Image (tube, rainbow, N blue to C red; front, top):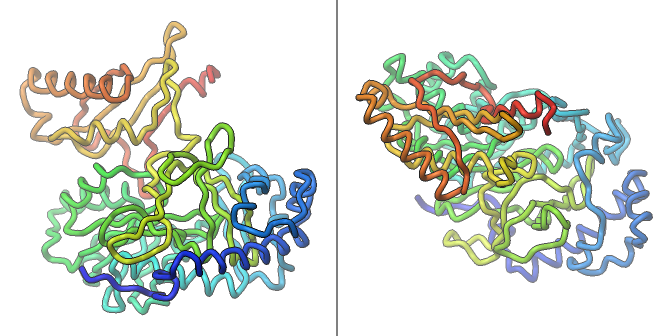
Length: 439
């Protein structure tokens, strides 16, 4: 796979030049946020900071954070820094866990976003010769339209399928000779399973790349996807509060995700203290936008757990890379005092042969003690084996989870297709403690 660049100037820019650009853009975005958004003026004034005192990138760490709740507090248009006549598009979160967050885009924002998605797709190996099926949802969710405009900017042929209607998705994949699929990783697996049930051979397609995002997924999940589909799987990253997809992407070397630092300054902070952490340390990702006009954000706490590295990648790109996000601060489970993320359990169970990439973690409380049961689908071949074989596998998984995560849990091996499939983001955890009012 030959390395190609969409925007060679920025992708290969020397660090000292990049930081000069970042500082100039940071000063401009601070002025815009302070003078156009009352809630930013209030936060900065309360912190006792004069934005004119920000004279280096190091000074950024003294500015207050922005949280999702801050954006919720000014619903619907309080985070938009331009008159609505200058806003050409609005996106919003679903609001399923609270008041929705709303972001606005000027015409210039849409142009930059499209350029960033073109850079992202190009970095993953997409070319103007490709036909790309976008199976992210279209609408207020940023995934579908974001990738769509980027793919058109790149010159690829776009098939805007949106999410759902799985059999139709597979038919289109085959008939339209789709070469690239964009969706959540869990939906890619569901497509694979459905295709197998309908005896559709992937050899009859032109499928070669899968570009996945919108939910945390592990390296073991990548291996599963590449075993079941004739593709190389790439991770992309973004979130609507920052811009949408297009913030970072994997290149062909899969050594972390390249962040478009000409448009976003990344930081890693301690999830408890908020203190900035050095490269290599694991913590919460924080982003400051540098070019957003509609909804600029300063030090936005994403809730995503990652780390940063600044060494040059084999592909030659010089911008910082983030480790793939496999968990979120609000995903962390505290079970009998042990902190554990669902992705850690996923990594263990998918390391065993005969396990299907479908599982569900059920947490309850019995006699004041947390109880964890992990339902794991096994292949039909394994499920039809002797009980002794299944019992041996079950014990091995439990022992490995105990050994690696210090977590005692009960593994339940279940027959294939027992767990409800998702056409969007998979629901991995059912925490009955919250339902029962325990936590």
